[in-house]
Image (cartoon, rainbow over all chains, first blue to last red; front, side, top):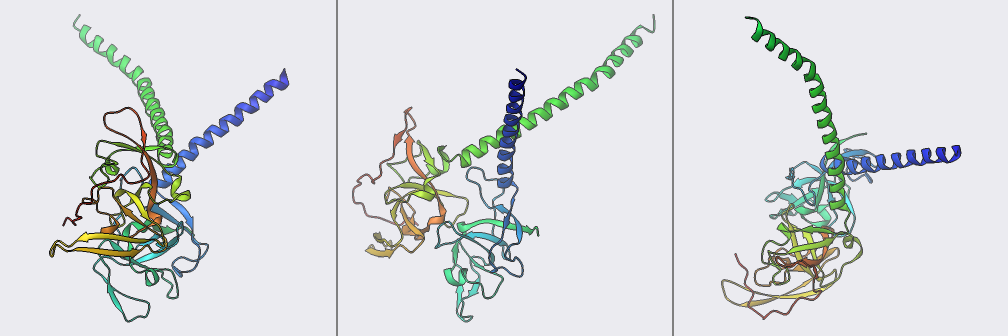
Length: 152
Length: 201
């Protein structure tokens, strides 16, 4: 009988731990969506600002059901953007041009004007590939979120 | 005898002094409990609705507008699921996606083209009245969306192919304003009369 009691005790504790973790998890996910979450940077296209392996804190720019603080892109913002050509892939770049701005293409000579509803992003690292110099101006909705600050 | 009212008042004050901390404590506990419960169940609800992914019902922005009539009208409530954004992309699917140019708006359209498809569409030029035919190849990583209501819908014919990364969810059923039941959405566009398509400016 004592053995069974202690087993019940253990089960109770395990269940308690499991439910607490579950509620904590729900809260954490909600917190991450509304306040922000850390993320690991990969690649060096944003160096020296953000290097491979750095941890940055970012905030989603929009939520599926709630519209709390709609994000307006600003020049200079470091943002996470979905790739326009690779599904499921996103990059961290800086917003260089907003609609109406004139930007230079990769050759350094051709100028284009960023059309309405789109943005021009580039990596801080001059040699970075895979930004607007390759894709052209990106639809604004591709912005996933804004990097708020670097953690370490 | 003159002291009577004062004594009564004093008695009342004593009682208040004794019970206020208890009431205060009770209220504080109640507030704390309610806040914690609210956070607990609120965050659970948020996670289920946003990520539970299996079923989410939305009215409002996804059914507003006339672009998907008669398949979806403003009185309808639609059911969508979030798994398909990763697993399935088929021509003929009705999906919701983020509006490419207005980042907080969502659109519901039918997928007409996938990467590599050749899309032909006609538009009437308002100024000349000529009907022009356009041919577009859907680039990698994009899809071509069109609303079922060709004349009123603003879709890829206006803003071009939409990146697949903006795919939100697959709309697979709807419930009309009056009925109780949900019905499956047709995978093929219902036949409409060939009307002249005009771009409304």
